[in-house]
Amino acid sequence: MVEHKYIKNLLSKSRFNRRLHNIDEPIWMFFFQVRAQTFKELNPGQEYILDSFPVPVCDNIRIDRCQIYNKEEYRGYIASKKRYFYGLRVHMLVNKNGKPIEFYRAAGSYNDVKVLQSFGFDLPSNSIVYGDRAYNDYQLEDLLKDSSSIMLKPLRKKNSKRKESYCFEYIQKVTRKQVETCFSRITNLFPKSIHAVTSKGFELKIILFIIAFCIQFL
Image (tube, rainbow, N blue to C red; front, side, top):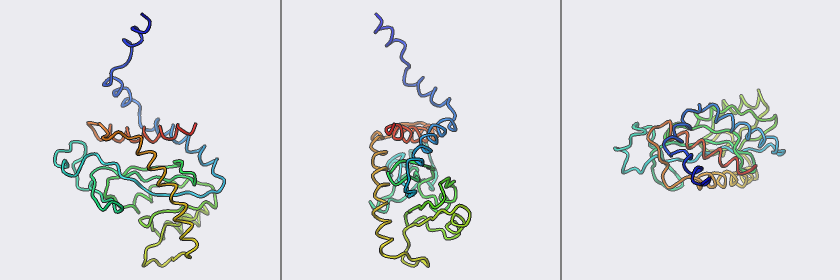
């Protein structure tokens, strides 16, 4: 009898979703930031990695029928797979152990340098941030170095005016493997297709999956 009463009081899927939507995004982000602060405190080496991963909202062949997003800016490109996707790209800063510190969501084709300028980089002095080639921004590098003693060190392009030594480039590439592991573990939490009927719902679920990943380290 007690078991039957318990089942009867369970929320339906639709009501549960409505309650999730009634919680403002800043509250979810607060939960994330609490964990992120702990991850920073447990990162004595002060090395961080910046990269991004795609979150498709639908396959390319279904773009014309997509109701969540309907602008060309959401069509991004995955260089490693040589294919396009339609949806968002999550730009994430993680510590050397692959634990998230900060993240931003942007349209799939949005300029990586512009997203980079949105990061707070609330990191300890003398931190080093390794990044992908897409995050080359000399002006921001100088600003972080002068104002916060933070070294932003993305992989350099062939025509870069700020070449790094081969030894340092090797350290960058080895260290950046942690971010690939982190992204793989986060996306493994995703279902085959993230069900949502609005952009707000789709983005909320991305946040919740990232928070769920952080909770695994409790």
